[in-house]
Length: 301
Image (cartoon, rainbow, N blue to C red; front, top):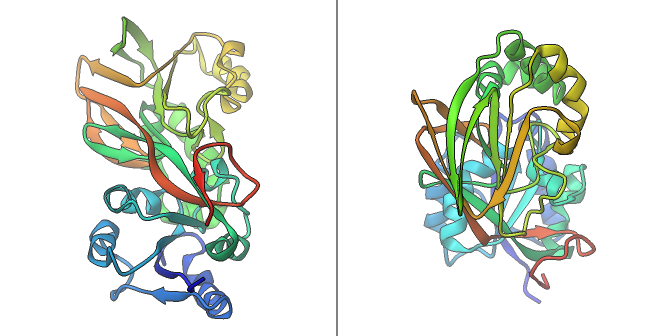
């Protein structure tokens, strides 16, 4: 079989991007993998670069975190090129959901010994995402997180940012439409996931899967900060039935309105404001995973 030709997109500003770039290049040479690297200093339009290379590559390798994958997602969905994630970010939630090796070099070896499978993606007001779209306290967390905090504390940066945001929680009212039902909720945090993991290892719902063809929604409205602290372990594991004042639903689409426009993030990036329409894109993204992982539709790589 001919050696694969891959487009390598490494974010040098990700937590470990600059450290691993040369190691990845050396590994691919040893595996006889032809690497295409875009020109520039790293601040590239990933989707534009993918579009420019369609027909000349076999795979896209993204080295970085969920934000790096998010930036490349439109190009990946349009081209139907397989994606291999090399986890070099802070949270690496997509890599976690795909059960990829945590060691970046071991993950990179899947270029030649992995297999391909399809997973779902989501879309909010036309913007695709892989993990979750949310509003409320998570937006404050995203605004508090910065590159320096992530570099200094790694995944603990999420806990630090969460504590800062939760010291001044703001509640809001939302009207949620889904097939056959309309809900009115008072919320501190409202999230809709297409995948399974987000926020540094949190689970959107214990029943959620990355290829189940559903979006998973939850809204939390704890009576107090102490109540939220008591529920935090259940919420982190997606066991919402064990927490108080939590609303959950699953559906192929949701429409959400708030009295005042609220900022919405997707995969940790600010993307739009309410009102929003969210849709599942079933089996839309082709990814590379270890051969023993996953039960979804797959092709041999």
